[in-house]
Amino acid sequence: MAFGDGARIIWDKNSEAVFKGNPNIARPGSERDQNIEWNSFRKGNRGYNTQHLTKPRWIWNYDFKATPGELFFDNAERRNGARYGEGFVIIEPEVPRWKTVAPNKDWGRKKYQALADRLRKDGLRLAQFRYDKGGPVLDGVEHFRTLSFRDAAAILSNSALFVGPEGGLHHAAAAVGKPAVVIFGGFIPPSVTGYETHINLTGGAEACGMYQPCAHCKAAMDAISVEEAHDAAMRMLGGR
Image 1 (tube, rainbow, N blue to C red):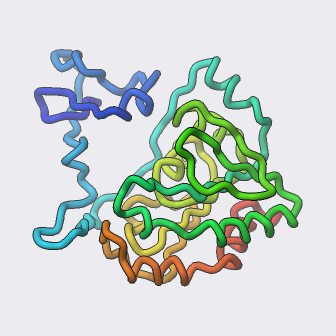
Image 2 (tube, rainbow, N blue to C red; image 1 turned 90 degrees about the vertical axis):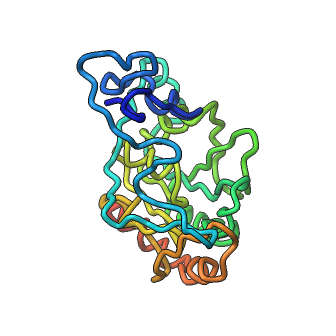
Image 3 (cartoon, rainbow, N blue to C red; image 1 turned 90 degrees about the horizontal axis):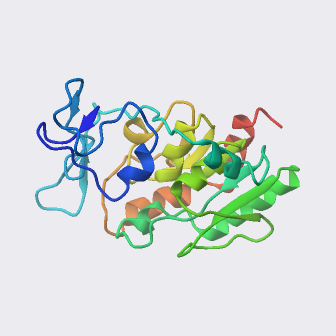
């Protein structure tokens, strides 16, 4: 599979990390190989959205449906990914603060902390990823230092559950076959970038696609209660 325009394989700065070790992906420079199948999905041509002509929002393509990807770890990555053990719950409140959409995807540290406190009372081992430029730190949970996205994904492959916002880690959870409770809110529809193996919480809102701070998205996040997220987590864990 070659991602590009049919003549040139187009990768961005994240492609190497995602596709490393994947024997099914054509790398830049292999455009003339005979066994290539082209896919036009790339930065600027994502397939699941288009830019609204006059407003700061995306128009979602509801015919698009994300399917779980694949991550191929080498032996060293698998060993490193197992350094914190297994069976823990990753709870991650971080959203991409450098993006204007961040407030619309932020459930808030207070709610994540309340959820973490409840899950700890249930006897679960909770952890949060810590890395340079990381966001809000939760109290009473372990902090797993990560070296890269791939390192975080390898650790995630040893978890029992992921809880966090729609984004890279929820896709990583699907790629390594792990259940998740994903806090979607009202920005992007789970029917487009969500997975059937996860519980996706929207607060009952229709996705607006606004990537500037949005009252509709705030209301959607406010409508997702700690109780709802806790119940979803316990269902994903089979009631443990």
